[in-house]
Image (cartoon, rainbow, N blue to C red; front, side, top):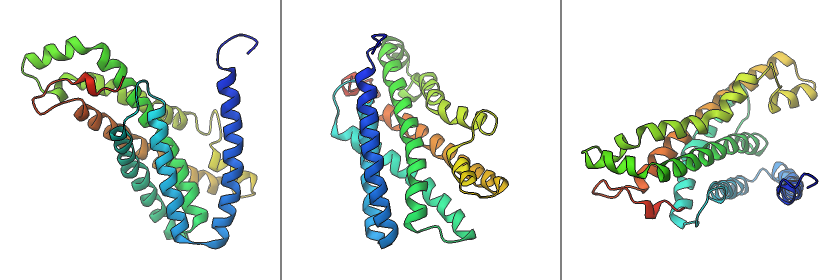
Length: 238
């Protein structure tokens, strides 16, 4: 605020929202862990998915559409929920994993990574395609389909979407100790064992991010293409 950067109110609102959300989640998780009600756990996961799908759209410019929300929800169901199921199945070999104490934290971490990847990829695609309209339509006029005409833009957007997880993996252990490992070390667990769990989790996050950006790019390109392989910027939402 002193530097007039224009982000003071956003930071203050984000800090207030974060505090209230984390406190509320803390109380909710305590109830869930005590009750061990599978239906309640499933309901919480559905709410988390819906909130993440909404946040992806909220970070984009232009009007929000119900079809975009459903598309984002589908992407997260496949990438985040699918990878979380895979990870929990792996963890179940060494002990109980499909209880609330394991399902909610693991799913939340993976969902957050997938949400960020989808939001970054979608933002990059929208801005790049809007700016390259003439070039895309020229390639379509030459007989190429939409996938070929937007291939370089899709690759660039996918790279943008995977930058956070790549940076996180590259800096893990040297620049910073990731959250799960730090928490386990602070709780008194053997650092080597904590590192193994963190490697496993990072692999899941990378898988979720890659699946998410690939689905986001493919479904978005399909959404702005009609059955005659024309670019439909009226569906861009910006």
